[in-house]
Image (cartoon, helix red, strand yellow):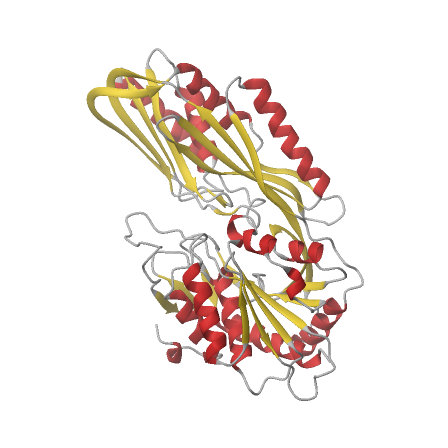
Length: 482
C-alpha cells in the first residue's frame, strides 16, 4: 500500500503504513519502540524509552503557546494479532499487507492494528509538523496494552508534567469516551492425569462465530466458542463410550473465541457422530439469528491408541465450562446501556499435563470487580479439589469527571465542525486512561478516535474519511488549548 494513493491526511497514513511493516503484537515491542525513538531522533525531539519499551517524546510549544498547559497525547503500540484460517503469516517477523476497499483500510486476512496504530500515526504526524499550532506536547506510546495495560502500569509518570491528556484509543468518531472499566485476568490450571485407551479418534470443530472484543462486544450476544464446546460436551459425554483428548479455543484473553476444536476417543463412531451432529443442529438453529455464519464439522479418523484425560478431569472441565460466569454479569444502574461487570473465557488450552482456562474479568466499579474474582474463587474451590487459581493483570477503572475542561472543549470543537452534539459515553472496555488518572493527580482526560469496525478480528477495518475528520478535530482541540 502506498500512502500517496490514499486521501488526506497523507502524513498520517504514511506513518500507519510504516508501522504496519514492523511486527508489533503484544510482547513483541522492542522493534516498534526503537522505531519511535528513531523517529524522535530524526526530528530532533527528546525521547525516553524505559525498560518496558514505553516511549515518551517531548515537543516544545509553538509560537504563542509557550504559556499554555502541557498536553499529553497518548496511544499504545501493540496490536492483537489474529489471522484467517489457513493464512500463512509469522506475526513475529512478517509485515501486514494493507489494502484500500472503498472508504476502508483493511489488512489481508489479518487484524489491521488500527487499534491503536492509527493513534500512533496521528501523533507522529503532529510531532513532525511545523504548521500545526499546539502547546508543549508529551507524546506517550505505551506497550502491551492489549494484555492488561502492562506498559502503562510500568510507566514512571513523574516523567510527565501534563495535567491534560488526549487518549486516542476510542473507536467511534461521533463519541467522546469519558469513563472505562477496570479489569483483571483470572486463570485456572486444571491438572489432568492421562491414560491410553483404544478407540476411534474424533475431531469436532466449531467455527464461523463472530468473536470480537470482550469489552466492546460482550453485550452483543455473540457466542463464545469455548463455552459452546462445553455445552456440547455436557450433552454428549459418557465416560463408558468416550474419552477427551483435548479441547482448545482462543488465544487472546480479551477476545471472544470464534473457534473451538475438540478431540475425543470414541468406541462407537457411528452413534457418536449421529448424536453430536443432532445436538449441533439444535444449537445451530437456536443461535442462527445471533450467529448466522456458525458452522461445525465432525470427523472420525482411524482406530488407534489415544491418550485421554481422566474421567475426573473430564467432569471438572465440563463443569467449569458450563457453570463459570461468562458474558454480561450486571448492567449499570447509573448509566443507561452500560455493561457494568462481565467475564470472558478468552483462552482454553490443553497441554500434556494441564488444561488452562484464562478469563478476562471487567467492571466499571472496583468493588464489583473484586467481588467477581471472589465469586469465581468460591465456585472453583467448592467444585474442584485440585487446581491452581491465579489472578493478575489488574488495572483500575477510569471514573467519570463531571468537571472536565477537555470534555467541554471537545463538545465545542465537535459542534463547530459537525453542527450537532457528540455522544458522551462510558465504555465497558479497559482504557489506559484509568491507569493514568490513578497515577497522575487531577489529570483531566478524554478519549477520542476515528471509526473502527470489528476490532480484534480479521474483519477489522478503519474508515479513511473518519480518520481525516478525527485528525482535523484533534488539531482544532490543540489549537484551542491556550
